[in-house]
Image (cartoon, rainbow, N blue to C red; front, top):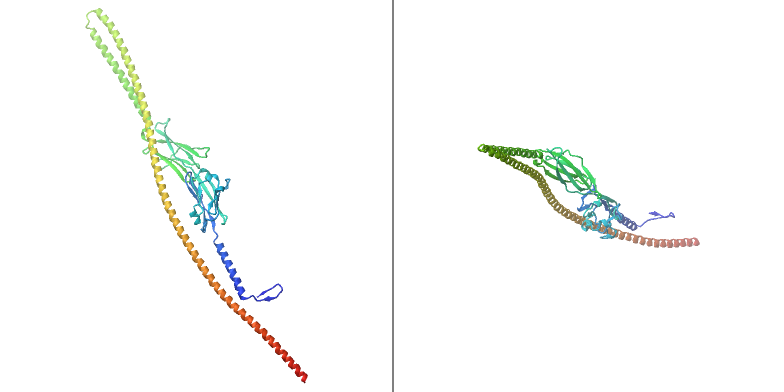
Amino acid sequence: MFCRKDGRCCKMPLGAICVFLFHHFIFFFHLAQFCGGVSRVVGPSEPVVAIVGDDTVLPCHLDPAVNAADMTVEWTRSDLTPKFVHVWRDGVELVNKKNEAYMERTSLPINNLKLGDISLKLSKVKLSDRGSYKCFSPALSGQTSVELVVGVVSSLTITVMRNSEDSGKVVLQCESAGWYPEPELLWLDGEGNLLSAGPTETLRGPDDLYTVSSRVTVEKRHSNNITCRVQQRNTNQSRETHIHVPGDLFNPSCSSAAHITIAVVVTVLLILAVVLVVWKYRSKRRGRNFTRTSSDHRSLQLDTEEKGETKHLTEDSVDTVDINTKQENLEAQKEKQAVDKFHLLMAVQLLMNHKFNLEKDIDELTSEVRELEKQQDKNQLVTNMQQTEQNNIQSAKINQDEETKIIFCSMKQALDKKIHENESVVYAVQVMSEKKEELDKTLETILDQLEKIKNRNEVQM
């Protein structure tokens, strides 16, 4: 029963009440289903780290997962003009809105979009790509930010230098150029312990890349294996190179002193031998002169001998000068050979270090290839699992829709039955009303006849 504004009340038919309740039930059912299934945009909780030249993925997905292939997805950077990095709308990419710095370097795989994965794939990462990215879809609630940290790594070079102050020590210099963010340089011995080194020199170039260098002084030990390591804490990247300092590089002045001492001794011995030969020669010449009989001949011979001795002494002096000159030339050649040997050792050591670094790079590349293959297999397995799960969800949804349809049909049949019953009741009420009207008319007729009979009786009396 309901009342009107004029105060009159009337009853509402039962069929109208059932139809009213049915329409409201359908409305609230769809409303609850729609509100309970709205997806939201979810991003990572930590920054994404990438190395210059590599490919990376900026994670972003829908929770719960829905097909985003026909939605609008926007990836932007607020510090750029235009700010759009990638725009996906109506199943295609809008290239005309895209920033030129990201042309042909971004993509949203269609297979991932169908699974609710709206992560942005970024190829050939540049140093300028670092910053904060925003993942947004106008059709969904919320947005998320993804922070990209870009790092640059480079190779190392170790140079061996002599120590001018102490010949028993060797100075090593390690240098590496082209790093970002700013790295730190460490020296390690063969056991992995830190070595005390000089301060690290850091220079930042106009391209925002850092160059670091440092020197360390090492002494002769049982194991002269030294490691130079450059690492970045922000990106968890590090590079290192190893060098073995041979014992020949220590105390090089001792061998030179020994060579000089031997040369001096040999020279003195040669001079003594020349003096002895000259002395014996003069003794023999004098013995011959005593056999001469004539004093004139003797004096003449003496003069001749004196001239001969002078001549021989001159020749001996010339021979001594030649020997000294040869000795100096030999010493110069020995020193030159020692220097050449030192440079040759350095070249061999550098080549060995380069070979070691190349072998290490090959091992690292092989490991990365294996990791990529494992990751690819893992991604394929995850994709298959997601596809299976999505199929199961779709099957469950179809079954739920079928059950809902059956329930609706049952409810409709029940309501139709009730409506039919109500219509029968209404028809019966209408028939009873008509019968009532007929009875009222008959009753009025009877009352009129009784009134006439009463009046007639009164007149007769």
